Amino acid sequence: MTTGAALIDTLPVRLRRALLIAAGIYLALLPTGWATAARSIAFGACAALALLILALSRSGRGESIPSPGRAIVGALLLWCGCAMASATWSVDLAYTLGEFRHELAWGLLTMVSFYVAARDREAWRSLVAVMLASFALLTVLAAAFAASPAGWDPARWHAGVGAFSTFLVLVAPLLITLLVPAPIGFGAGRQTLAIAAALLALLLLAARLSDNRMVWIALAAVFATASALAALRWRTTLARVPLRWLAPLVALFLVLGLFFADVAQERARASFPAETTIAQTFAEDPRLPLWDFTAARIRERPWTGYGFGKSILQDELRLALHNPILSHAHNVFASQWLQLGVFGLVAFIALLAALGWRFIGFLRARDDALALIGLIGLALLVGFLVKNLTDDFLVRSNAKEFWALCAMLLGYGVRLERAIGARAASVANA
Image (spheres, rainbow, N blue to C red):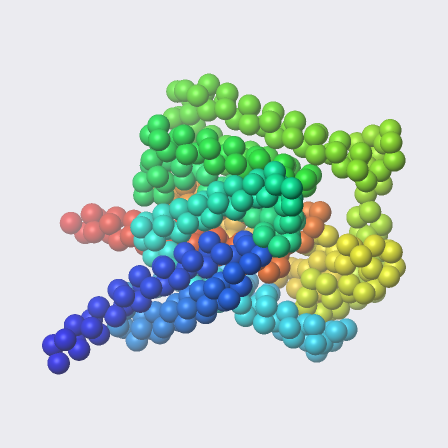
């Protein structure tokens, strides 16, 4: 009886440890285009463990799990409700029902899993370390394959060039953790700074391997957002040693600009006639007629859209534009409007706004650790949205990575906020 009671008492702790391990494995494998069986098993374990922990919490047998806030929950449910309602008028019901499973159900379970998993600083730092290590390994593999005679096949190893470049944008804000002390970061010592420099170099290498133009603009947006917010939040500290921070930032932005120009020139040489300027390549970008065509389709069904799913009109788009690559709207906001109509678009924007507002609240907190969570969250949002102004990677692995990171930030941030409030109340009552 005593042994059984002890096992029951320690069950929540054991479940949390198991969840953290499963979440780490899933996060490491998520950006890959292989090991699908292991990734599915890890995901299933994450979902089951997170739901069990939630059930124990509700029954009073585990620690209380705070809500991320009514605004976020409400906006998320509204967006999901609009998506599910679109099944009644979808032009391709079978496709829409399949996307319910892949994007809504799996996306929601990913959010819940990582929100529950990020319960304290050890869990947060463990998950961040796993994602940074996974990024480093994948980049080294990409570079090795690119240098080999066989070459690098991103569709096989990294779920495609676009997905890989978007993964890089999602990773970029986490590099901040290598520049700040615990509990959010890993310290700012020489060894940690050396690791940060090495990972930044790998990030630039991986972005160049992707041959993607928008990744440079998105990375610039991430670092510019983080820098501006840090300058506003810690302006007194930064004012003491401005050159220590400004010089590396200026150098970084110069490097990003040079790489962007290099990739744009290479794209002009590879995809356009000789003597075509970079400006002409943008003016003749095939996405411009795509956006015109998408706008025309939206005007035909502005209120309801055509049904949930990024590629709901893929056959029509490919046929009309004579380009197999142009199978969706190539803009995350236009894509939402095309799928779910104006109400779905508003719900999606409301969800992003609720996330942003929550991160702003963290940033404005007096506690530096909580403020850094807000800073990372806002940089993540800005980078992801900028990257998706010319494409739509709110789908499959990138969507799950985005939702997982948002859930991690919220999960740890909300708990940290609650702990700070409890300490303040304790001091006030003393």
